[in-house]
Structure formats: structure tokens, C-alpha cells
Amino acid sequence: DQQVKQNSPSLSVQEGRISILNCDYTNSMFDYFLWYKKYPAEGPTFLISISSIKDKNEDGRFTVFLNKSAKHLSLHIVPSQPGDSAVYFCAAPRDNAGNMLTFGGGTRLMVKP
Amino acid sequence: KAGVTQTPRYLIKTRGQQVTLSCSPISGHRSVSWYQQTPGQGLQFLFEYFSETQRNKGNFPGRFSGRQFSNSRSEMNVSTLELGDSALYLCASSLVDFSTDTQYFGPGTRLTVL
Image 1 (cartoon, rainbow over the protein chains, first blue to last red):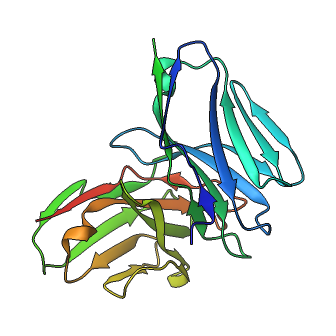
Image 2: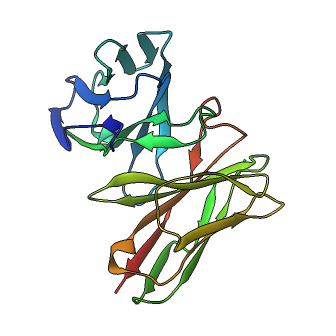
């Protein structure tokens, strides 16, 4: 079963505009979420996280929003830059110890100059 | 500080063969996890090792196995390779706990099974 889902496999955005990447989850026990960014031929790199005690976490151009009632989180990138073009994964720790991450399928973001 | 390293970076094998992939975590990190990435399935968790013990395991067949050494280096083995095993295999390390410690990923080993 896919406990973390990213329903948009790809997203194309013009440089300077906002990119919004979405992620849905099914397990209400998840209390911590992470976003990773992955360039081709490289491993994913940690981008930003959010704890369920918050509904928003901001780090520079990146903001993650969490809607617990809807079991939905989103990553906003403002303004989008061509270097942001990558695959973005949302993830949640799957077990009580938080040591097993479950990932969404990823969304490929393309930022056009 | 050196990052997570994985060797080899690329591998080509034929069906039925076996393969061993290696991962060296960041110095001081004791947790090492392995993931498989395929276009259709995204990133899937294989297993996680901590202090030379498999602590968590994903939903993969027994052909996939691993181990961790006393210096935290880890190896992953796939026996009786199938075409569907062609994927990017990623290793990640963290201090102790994924949920509170940032995971750092290696560049991956791209395995092609012919």
C-alpha cells in the first residue's frame, strides 16, 4: 500500500513563478515529513522537513505546508529557478522508531527560463 | 567531512548472477539504509542497519540481503538477478535515527541486468 502519494509525476513552471508540489498521506500516525530533491545521477538530498505540531515551515525560498485534517502537505518554491529543476520526493518515517522512511513516487519539476 | 560513498557507480550483470554493492557512510554515522529507485516504483526502502544489526526491513524478497561491518560500512547483495532488479540503488546514512537525524544519500549504484 502506498502510504505517501505524489499524484503529479511532473510539473512545468516558468522561472520566477511559484512551484507547488503536493503530497498526500494515509497514515494519521505520521508526525514528521521530509522533502528530498534529486538531480539525475545523484542521490536525494534533504531539503526541508515539518513536524506535525506545525502547519508551516519556511527555509529561504522553500516553504512546506501541512494540513493534518486533509492529510496533505505541499512544498512551495518561490521564486522558482532553473536550478530547481529536479525530482522532488516527500517522505514520512514509517515505524514508531522513525527509522524506515516511506517515500512518495516523486514529482519531476521543470523550471523554464 | 566526506559524504556517503557507494561503489561501484555502474554495474552490468546478466540474469541469474549475483551482485554486491558497497556503501561507506559519513564518519560517525551508525545507521545505514538502502533504497531501490525505479521509474515505475519511485524510491522504495530495502532495509536499515544499525550497529551491525538489521533493524528494519522493507518488502523485498529474500534475494536481497545486506550486512553492516563494525566500522558501519555496509554491503548489499542481490542473488539470482532478475531483469526487474535493474534500478538505481541508493544508500543513506544518518547518525542514529532517520526521523530526527538528517539522512544523507550517496550517489547510488546503477545496476543494469541484461
